[in-house]
Image 1 (cartoon, helix red, strand yellow):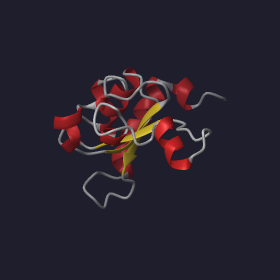
Image 2 (image 1 turned 90 degrees about the horizontal axis):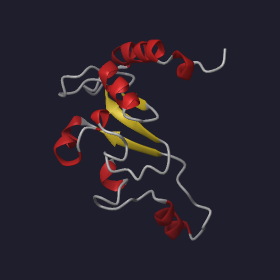
Image 3 (image 1 turned 45 degrees about the vertical axis):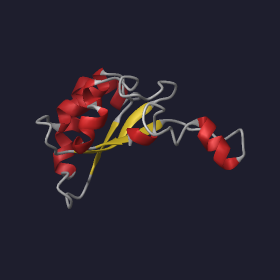
Amino acid sequence: MIKYNSDSFEGNKVSDQYLQSLSGNEDSYLDFYSTHYYFWQNPWFGYPFEESPTDFKLDGTKPCVIGETASLDESGRTIAQKYEGAYNNGWNGVMAWTSNGVDGCGGFTDVEPAVKHMLELIPDLIHPIE
């Protein structure tokens, strides 16, 4: 979660510098940020679907995805609205959790409308080669 992906909170536990300090290898680095977000985090860290990655306190030097989020939550927004908000604010993608619907966070049938919406909104980015 952002708490461990940003110097603004409890320290960036995936920064290149931190990874290099753990490995002892200067070639250790992070390819992209994949922060997780659930609605219960909102009071402390904000709502990433209405903010850019840098507004959400990532450093902005690498691609950023919301690597895990609930399809269903208390925000009152649909997952399609969340995907579009992330796209409009400069995120490089969203991966909703879960696919099997066993934990109250939704399932694939809840994600499907968001995927279809994004395909209609940005077809050239979804299928760049045809």
